[in-house]
Length: 423
Image (cartoon, rainbow, N blue to C red; front, side, top):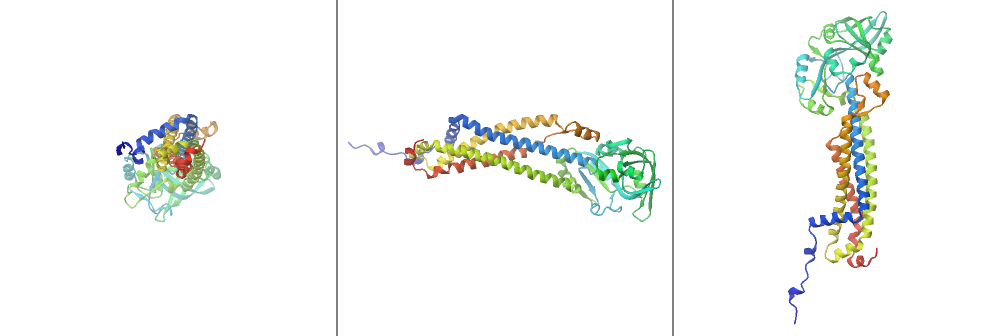
């Protein structure tokens, strides 16, 4: 008696092919068929993520500390200036109504300190010796909250009265001057008149920066404005933010009155260039680490494909297409990556959070120098979401790509040949 057609009907291959969630579950199960290999491979990925995140966070922390320390001396995080002052620091390029402008800036979110400054070049004399110097008029209370220079006074004290003068150590040495000596400043007003000031050296500054020690000379802003006939004008409004990352939000708002914001990158271009060079070097190192991980994963998946040829042949004989088999292997690579990224990222975040709280000491010698300048003697790593996601995305691209390259052999397999192959 002939069989009914339904008894001999063969299920179409498409209906035997597992759906995507099932393939994901099978891929996860396949990872743990060889636990040692899975742990070693995911451990390599975890180490790469750990190294990238910790190293990058430490590097950003070092750069932030270095930039913060450098800008703390004179430049600040940003300055509000006349558009032409940076290229032509003439006495006439001023910020008018400077005190009101400074008060308005101080009210902005994220601003830690604001100080007005006047700048002029003049002839400085002590006795019979004279030298050219940069005369800076400052508001002493504001300067002490913004600049590290008041903490660098090694002899005497910082500015207190209108007759006080603070000079750099090299300039004092060139003038043969010491604390208590009378100092005379002669310059020109913007109208061509004679600007004159006579005061007493109250303190000598030692910064360790030759250009600063050789040229800096500070007097009170009130005395500067009176001597150079500026009234309520200044040449710059110096701003220090709570964090470097808040500078873009500060300068994004229009300055008004024809003025322009100068961020620290414009004021200290050599510092920014050095940071960029070091960042490029670190990216090359991270690229080498990623390449090593890629070769490791490629080797692992090449071995997986070699060992599981008969399994793949059986799946294809049951109706699974080669592309589905390849997709299953890619899911295994993704699971492996997520597993390694999760472990490495968690360890890196935990370490960086601890180090960001306690800091990394710079050592006794360097720390003592920094402490003497009222600067932090520790480096604090800075963890950002971009640092964490950058390493994770890199691994999610590199590892599956390595797995794909190793698994391309599956596309050339035939079920008959694969089932006959012995491993």
